[in-house]
Length: 189
Image 1 (cartoon, rainbow, N blue to C red):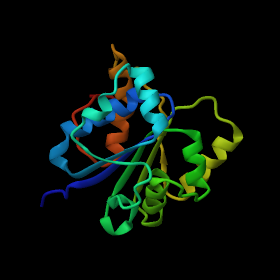
Image 2: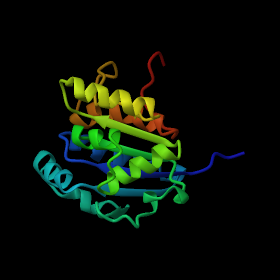
Image 3: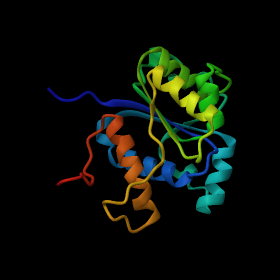
């Protein structure tokens, strides 16, 4: 029996760490045989930060259905569309706080609210450091609600040589958490 294909929404916020979003999108496109639907929403700040950090606007070039941050008619704004996973990468602490507080004021926070209420997979990749007690409490609230906090803390045991390889040490964990099969460095192998 074959595994069902995944319906995944990606949200990119204005937190620093656009390289993580780029590597995630690149890898998901490579894994498209396992994906039925892939959707993207970016905040205005996410686009600005991407251009500043990566020096381009290549986010416009991905062959992924992209939705405006205020498009509440996007399929993943409703549980009936059956998106199984929402990945917010990178996730700003402001976005994380709004989700933890149940504030659905844009498509990103609405989609997170839907994923949580449907008991599906919400994966948040915060990049900020250090954490304040407010950040820690918001992450605790979301973890208790069923979200997965996967901090953008790269590993080094695979000896990454480039920024993209370093970012991939986090993104490969995210892809594993999303339930996709991939060929990546595994400890002890």
